[in-house]
Length: 304
Image (cartoon, rainbow, N blue to C red; front, side, top):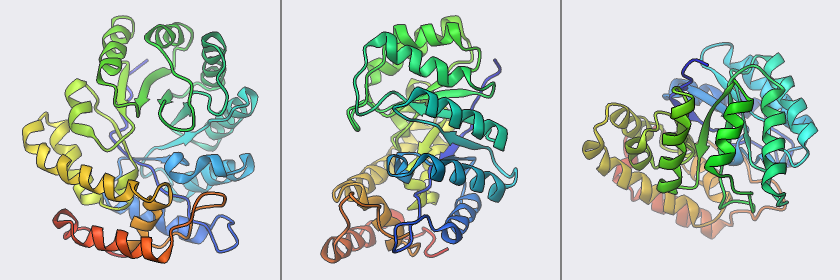
């Protein structure tokens, strides 16, 4: 298949109301914020968007809503992951019919099937659609099953639309092995960064980055990404160091930290959905103070 490179992909949070239902009015505002602040594409709803806390019906509605709100201005990549292979494959078909530009799904989580089952799970999701299919690899989250270079090569053999691996492992040897082996059989196969550490990923060969922090500091993320896209990694290093500091500040409170950081920048999207731990008042103040102290955020947009 032709090269699939969606560029800088923003991964929005999911806004919730006080009753924990999805807040679609705020979601529309959030999508517009991402579109006017450097998103080449959107991916919904990823782990940053609390995908595992959403029902299948909610995920479908959010995909459909995002595609309609974007209205063709940028590609929308639909997340179609589930422990149930049939559920994930059906959601992928739904997303394609709704107008998604690509499908991304993670390796199975909360259960640890043997390699042959993992391969079949991913292959059935990818075979359910004809648009580009991406595998999101995040072995350090939620007990996700690991994949190997051999499995990637088998997926390439079975799926003409298998376009790349979105890697959150930050295992550089793994990424190098994948890209070197895969491109011998599919020249346009991509390794993509699933984290905001683009300098290392770009040096390996990544040209796409999925960015959770784009909702907090879109200018910083855009500047770093653009320098890496031009292979100016030495110039990008100070920006990457600022991003790394931001990652640590947001990471400290846990999943609620990302939403807390978005709110601290003037874009309140509600709390995380239970049973995830909420951000307490003291933690919220600590996070806001940490962000205020970061010089790299001085030029970032505040509010919507």
